[in-house]
Length: 271
Image (tube, rainbow, N blue to C red; front, top):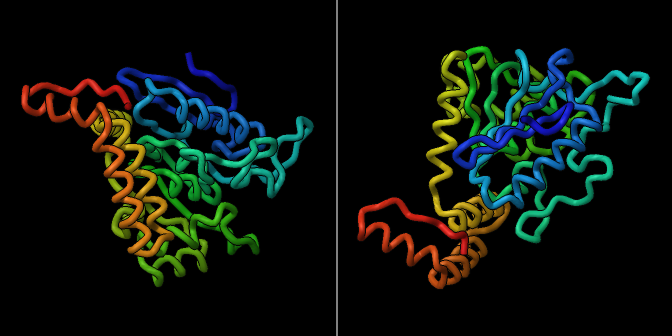
C-alpha cells in the first residue's frame, strides 16, 4: 500500500521504490505538505538498503505543474514555499555531506518518469534525477522568466548548460518556452522518449537493470559524478583514487570476482 497523501511511496519488487507526486486535480503542483512528504520518502530511500533504485513520477496526466501559487484555507501553496530545502526539512545530506537537491541525496540510481507536463519546480525536479524517461505526452519548461523569477532550486542555470550547451540553455531560460517531448529529447534533456503506453514498463525495466549494480559502486559513482560537476580535474581524480582504494578492501569486490569466475549473479552485501 503506498505511503503518503500528497506524495506517495511504494516499494516494488525487486528493490525498486516508486515516489508519486499525488495532487492530480492540481496537476501535482507542489505544496509545503507535499514537499515534507517528499523529504520523508527521500530519507527512506536513502537509508533503506533493500531499495536499490528509485523512480519518481506524477499521478494523473501531469508530472508536476510547479510550485502551487494559490493559498487556500488549509494553508497549502504560496509562492516561494516549495524550495530547495522544504519547511522543517533541515539540510540535505548525502554520505554525510551537503547535497543540493532532493534526489542527489539518494545514493542510488534515480529516474524521473515524466508522464506529462513538468513545469517550473517540476522541471527542476527532473534535473535533480540521474536519468529522465519521458512519454510522448510529456512537456517541460522553465517558465520563471515569465513570472519575473529565476529557477527556484538553481538546477536550470547550473545543469541545463551542461546538458544542452550554454546557448540552448539560455534560450530555454530566457523564453520560458514549454518544450515538446520530441524537442527535449533532441536537445538531450530527456534520456529516453517512449510511447505513453510503454512508459511505466520501460522505466521499471531500466530501474531493475540499474539496480543490479553493486550498491557501494553505485553510491560512489553517483557521488563522484555529481560532485565532479563542480570540481576541477585534479580534485576529481584524487577523490576517484581514494574511493577506488577503499573499494579494493571491500567484501563486495571479492564477491564480484567470485561471481564472475563462477558465472553466476553476485549477491551484494553493501560492504
